[in-house]
Length: 206
Image (tube, rainbow, N blue to C red):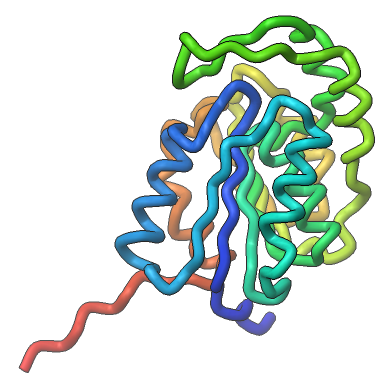
C-alpha cells in the first residue's frame, strides 16, 4: 500500500464533558507544535449540542484539503470523527470511540459538569439524543483510512462493541489500559504512521 500523503491539517475532537485540556489533546498539541510545525492544528471546545458541534466542525474544516487532512477523536469525539471522516473522505484516528452515544448518553440528560473545570456546568438536553442519532455514520467505504485504538480495559465503553463497529478498519486492540488511554504515548508511533508523519531523523555528524 502506498504511503499516505503528508499531513497538512489535523483536527482533534474531545469526548463528552471533556475539553482541549484533556491529556491526549495536550500531548498531541505539544507534539505537533514541537515536531511538526508545518501542520495546522485545531482542537475546538465542542458545544454540548451535537448539531452545533457538527456545524462548528464542518465550518472550521471546510477549506481544508481532503487528501492531506485528518481527524482524531476520543470517545464521543471518535463518533464525531467517524461522521466527519466519512463525510469528507479523509483519514481518521479513533481512540476508544463511542459507538452508540444516543443510547449511552440518554442517561445523562440534565445538568452536567465539565471534567477539567468542575465549576463550569452545562445542560445536556433530551433532543440532543436525536441530534446524535442524525450523525450516525455507515460502514467505512475506505477502511484503510481509519485507525481505531481500542483498549480492552476501557471501563466506560465495551471494547467488543467498538471492535465490531470498526471491524473493517485498521484495529489496534490494546490489552488492559483504560478509557482515557493512559498509555497514549505508547501508541504514538502507530498513530503518526497512519497520519503520514514521521519522527525527524537526527542529522549525521560532521
